[in-house]
Length: 333
Image (tube, rainbow, N blue to C red):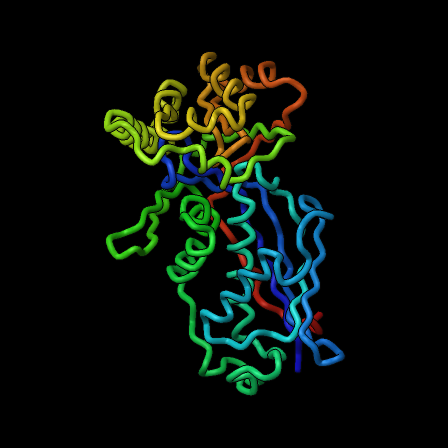
């Protein structure tokens, strides 16, 4: 049987963008790349081999607990495809981990998209599974298709909320929500070409669970109303009128950033200083990275205020989202 390989490229993302808590997200042109191969172990056993370059090297799980592998296995199950006998991953990671730039969403999306592409190719299944013999033929009737909407739903299910996986998959600026049936939905918007996000990345990390644990169960009605107006303004500013005054007003927040400040005091202080200078700056996702919108008249204000202990990464908006190279057989030239 011929073994197969696919390469998936996934962008970093920034969620919330200030007022759009658990809803707004932006794809950033800063990518992880995952090469996923299904192979046949010589001893007939089940095997997972993972190598990691860049972010997370020497820290991440290298077996079945690796997040990309977990996403692949969930996808094979969702597609009614037998689990493969061998999975080999080569992960080239650039997205910082536990910094609020969507590294876990990127890994989940990469695994789902890789498995979807590979499930229709011939591969050696793990012995003893229902339908394992059928997978010897390309396009087994047992294997169901996974639509883009179902990919988004599965990614949201694994991540727990849709605000990072939406821009990771679709690119651009996204608005995500859950409908009355509990289904994750999203719409993609195109930011103005002049928008240049700047990520200010500290050396320290902060888990999403820790950051979410600081949020209150209830917020004042006036704060919810305030954020609803600012989120609408921010969408208008990002897509139609990206001047600094509107972006500064549109990135104001009363729902989450100040509640999380005790867990990332340096981030909160720098956001406050930048905003006092007129720079539209927010906490990226759960933090501690800061995302600033670098309009031409604000670019020179950022670097002097940041100092040397933050990494400044000027980025473009990724308009396309995750991409999958056409699956190829490992013995192809």
